[in-house]
Length: 226
Ligand SMILES: [Zn+2]
Image (tube, rainbow, N blue to C red; front, top):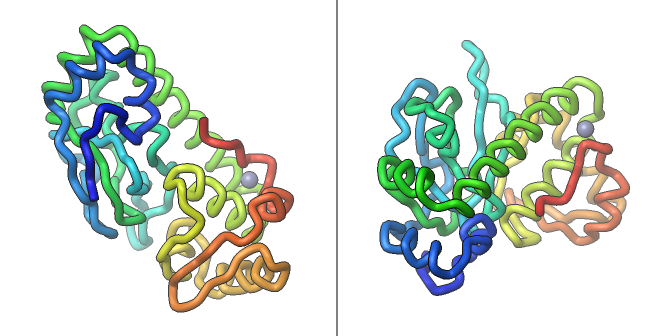
């Protein structure tokens, strides 16, 4: 269930000094986000920003005739909608909930006001925006140079870091869309990881069994979310 406690289970908010968090907290609203919920489409106004607690959100680049390709994911380490801090009021990407879970959300205008006044929040949000830019650059290179097995291992580790759980409910078709490959390619890669005892899956439920083993399979693009 979404919660709004003294200690927020979102690392960006948790990094705020108590006085700063108390001010921000007044405008935060706990919300449950369901799988597949569209937070903003490309070209839509960003009216709210989101601080995931257990939800995982994907940023998708759109190409006509294709399902969106994932260019970044955001979970409890960051925020969704940080573009408003950089002066943008419209989303340039499609932003979709990928794993159901909780978050804290805030009106974008309120967030802008706090961003201008609260020093630690300001610094944390800029850092988050920089991390997101880096993640997009790494993902672009990863999609081009690395194998599906390496990319799937990286993807699962990134999701694990951002959700704080070892289990996800995801279809292989969905994973294929995220990775920009055909479902058959994901099936083969998942089978390989399962045969090595690194993951298990059944009817869309994927469980990570061996994080270290998965790290050994992932490409060098994987870096642990701080
Ligand atoms: Zn890679």
